[in-house]
Length: 300
Image 1 (cartoon, rainbow, N blue to C red):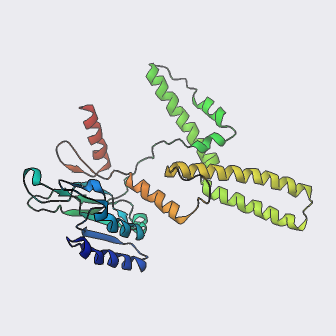
Image 2: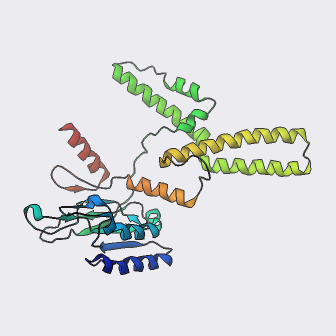
Image 3: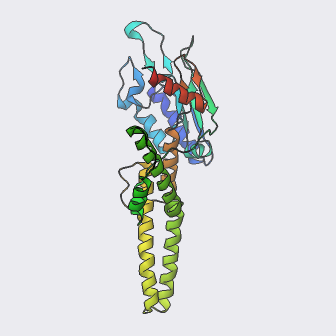
């Protein structure tokens, strides 16, 4: 639990303390409280703000590889309770966590209640249970690398169901979805493991070639294994690039701890753990969240 002074110069001691703790921290870590400083310019309205004011806080968060815990409820966590143009809203209360926290507790979130008679919003940390249902269908570009991809799509588009045009389209898409999932299961499941195994088998073949380099059978086997390894590495490349959705990932080593931690953290931040419905009730159950979305868009 932290408290930051109102004066920027006095807050420097807090940033240094956090960085010092980070140097010795290899476990789950959460830094929470009133930092008395925003992290982004859009986190304050009603009073001017400059990057100079928040630069040291941003640098501290970056050096300590911290990130905001997924949150819901009030965005601004403090206001000065003044009237008219003198009212200032600010997001100075927050919960920052490290990668170890995200990996161990991916479904945790902080809920900021409205402040009521206070000037700060109470923060409630919740350990949300993974209530995932079946994964939604997602198309992966690597599927098009399969030799039987076109035939799979052709067969998947065939259906004997008849009805309205929209009904037939939905049936074709559902049938195609099943065919592509089967293709993924047979050819691309555990693609990272398969790519690593192919690389290992190729290297074993090349090791044998060191003993008999002119053996034609080994040369042919090496060529076949090289083609297979390149194909699987490219499939893995496309898979990870699409999962992470980053533009800078073009070449290089994809199988790094940092990369996978970032991917898991992004997936966590994209989840919806709670929603406030039209009656102002905060819903956390999966079915209730889904119903709130449906009710909202069907009554617009």
